Amino acid sequence: MWFLSRTLKSYYFKGSFEYFVFHFTTIIYLFFIDDVLAMDFFAHIAWSMILFGKFFNFSYLIQVSFFSVLPDLLWGIPAVFYMIYFTLKNRKILSWKKRPTKFTKKLENLYNSSHSFSVMILFFFIFSIIFSQFYWPILFGWGLHLLLDIFTHKDSIYFKQKPFYPLSNYSVRGYIWHGHWKFLILNWSAIILVYILFYGIRILGF
Image (cartoon, rainbow, N blue to C red; front, top):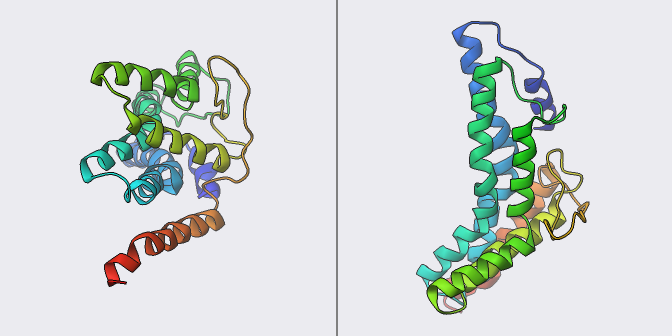
């Protein structure tokens, strides 16, 4: 995936409809396939449902699962629209490693905010006030997302992990890159194994 991403990012529009389609689908690949599907989206949902499924009813579990992917949605959706806008306007694929534009800097700030325990706690208190009780899905779902990213976003090619932003710019390097094929196998194997341990015995009637 990494090699294909680097290859695709080096291409430019040639002015034909075929190249337009190629680059547009490249955008979808770079964000949703190479990055999102590698770990962030489905694995975050899977881990949240497995770990908290034994403790909450289905409605509550859906809320926890939603907040387990909300950090990526908060910055990812604007990022996709900006990548499409940039490609149509400049007729080339956006390179995140080049000098950042004002908007990519805003995306970085948005990413840092959505991946911060400080912001998570702020949302927790806001929602708790709105519902007149502690709103735990934010802490469980959002908190689990941040913990997983801290360990699995080693030397991120996009943005660093700043768990206390904006109170602190302290960054965490991480321990493994979530898009590496070895980690993908290990991660999803662990998801299946934990699911069997938590729910397989009950399903089999033991």
